[in-house]
Length: 101
Image 1 (cartoon, rainbow, N blue to C red):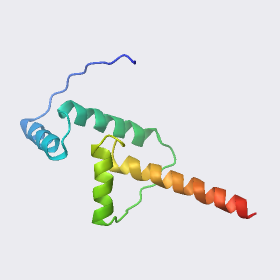
Image 2 (image 1 turned 120 degrees about the vertical axis):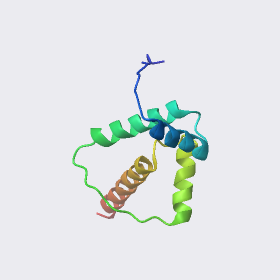
Image 3 (image 1 turned 90 degrees about the horizontal axis):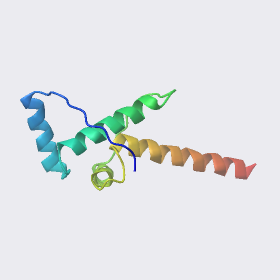
C-alpha cells in the first residue's frame, strides 16, 4: 500500500455546490473522490508527450456506456477511456498490417 498525503485547498461555495451536485448525479463516494479523479486525469493528460487534440462526436448510447465505465471505476475519465480504446485499436491495426506482409 502506498503512502497517502493529505492536502488542503480552498474553493468558493459556488464551486463546492457544483462538486456536491456532481457527487450526487454520478454517485461518487464524495467530493474527495471527484478531486482525486480530476488530479489523476490532469496528471495522465499532462504526462503524455506529442499529443494532439481531436474533436470527436460520439453517439449518445455509446457515451452513456462510457459514462457507466467511469462511474463504476473502470476508468478515470471518459477522455482517458477513449485514449485507451484508441491505443488498443492502433495496436491491433498495426498487428494486422504486419501479419499481411
